[in-house]
Length: 130
Figure (cartoon, rainbow, N blue to C red):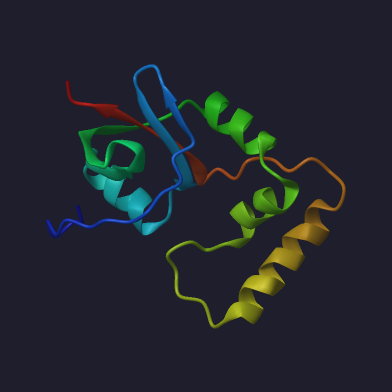
């Protein structure tokens, strides 16, 4: 929900169903990250084709631990790690060239060194209402 109370929706990549809830990762500075920080009450909707059913889950979004976020981050492909640093998610950019320049900047900066998880990036666990 936006700060003005407008419900909003977007597609996220569900990375796991764990004890306690559903996990996805994002840039905490993105629009969705800001909206979740403002109001932790969220809903998930997905189509379960085999059952020909819609599944709705309502609950509370909680940040996963820094350790969990870091462990997932280091399992990602190197280009995805660089992308987490380079992408100003939900911000207007001048064009594709800007994103390519940012990607190349971080690619050079990190060279062959391990890439640390950005402080603005991590996971949320959606704890469903029972």
